[in-house]
Length: 165
Length: 165
DNA sequence: TGTAGATTGATGCAGGTGCATCGAGTGGGT
DNA sequence: ACCCACTCGATGCACCTGCATCAATCTACA
Image (cartoon, helix red, strand yellow):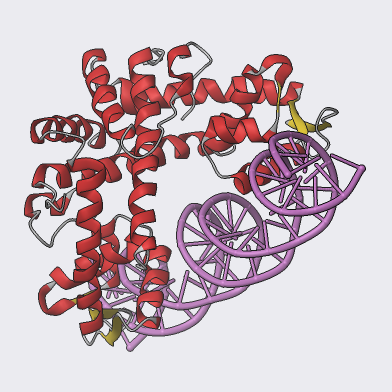
């Protein structure tokens, strides 16, 4: 229980940290250079666009995106400010509300996916064979399930317009 | 050149993003609960402690840690504020300076490694066999070399007190 | 019904990050 | 010696995050 981490585990840890920040940086940089907002916005827009009638309770969005409550709250503020979503009252629970994606939001999400998917291909797809990508996913999954309920919900439904981070 | 990313690549990307943020969160949480500062401080202290005579130019530190210049500058401010390092003038280049780790800094680095290594064992070591950790490292390396000069320098020298992120 | 406790979402504050820019200092070419 | 381009490190600004806390509302249960 107090074992020292193996050199291999430590080395994997180091690479996990370095490589993901590196790759994420590259992808975000590409998106930014194309004039798009941060990836978090994309994730939120995607979740909203996939929801029935394009609306979600903030609380749902929060759970989908695995980000803290206050973070969701402010992200919604920004989306609303930019006209990508709007708040709608929730009649069944007056504490709550619904957030609905606008046409502009849907359109931005689709345009971002173009740049996003290209970046994924550039920084991941072109570096790994499909088989290796599968191996990598498998190994990562084992780590993920480690610390708490790993929630990787949209994985099954990855399709043309689907991915998010 | 304009290929669409494979489902496998996309799925690997999603997991890479989710799993690392999840695992990193867990580790940082453990350290924070033990009353330690953020991991970035540890990294800096480690680099300094490994440098000959415990001092580095900010510019070196920056290159070791792969973080932007302004970030290094402010991290050093914080370390100095906490008495973990001190600035020393650089006689050979009056633009520059040296940052030297203090005894307190060395001591904190060692204490953090205790908690840090335990966390790595808990969230990585215990989830993967050595063989799988090696496989994971290999796959990640291929991704890393992707976007720019991947600099994973301290990897070779991983030993008892070594790891960083 | 009444009330305690949980849930929803917002916000003030402190701190961290990215970006642009600055002033000081160096070094190479003329 | 001079100048220009470059490097080094700091800093003002906007924004983003984490934390703690708040008010409003809902729910469960006595």
